[in-house]
Image (cartoon, rainbow, N blue to C red):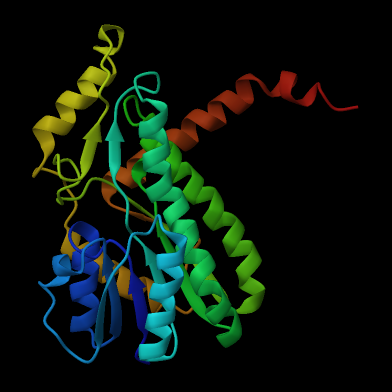
Length: 275
């Protein structure tokens, strides 16, 4: 298979670090980015690697990083929008500032990189944009509403990209991981709302208890996720959606059953509004 050039955001830890190591082990070329370049020191220096400091919320930095990647490697074949973080709390508990901050990274940051790489991908008439969503981007949970909404946004953006870019020879995929054994549930990656209301103790409170008690016990293997990414980008016809993990598959099936049931229950009212 031809050597590819990957551009991976949030490569300092978690999924990003696992994907970065798998890319280099496969012999591909990698532009690895993180807010602080020193956080990428775990990657040994080599000709196939370009480590860069990048705050994805800064559009100017995003364009400069892409320019540096093109200057070094001449092309970008795969963009992995991985940078992001979680916020846990009820919708009402989440302040305007907390909402704005998580959207700035999870959604606007991804859009900054998409806009930055697409001119080169359009020119070369090839490429693959992979946006990392979540099990919470397909079905919402109490306590993950605002975080999940950022991933719902990524799902919609990717669906539109898939339709817009296919005629140009460019693929778009949204990856939906379940719970994997990374630091996502640790305080280093997961923000909790400053406000906590007693009325949500039986719903959001239980979610907080789950998050606090299941870090390190998640069913997903991050190394296997990284290998799945290699198979994804080498597929001749990559999917629009790629769920990863048995918990994600179960959640998708559960939501689909619920949606179908409600459609039937309310069908007569739904069809009554046409002329």
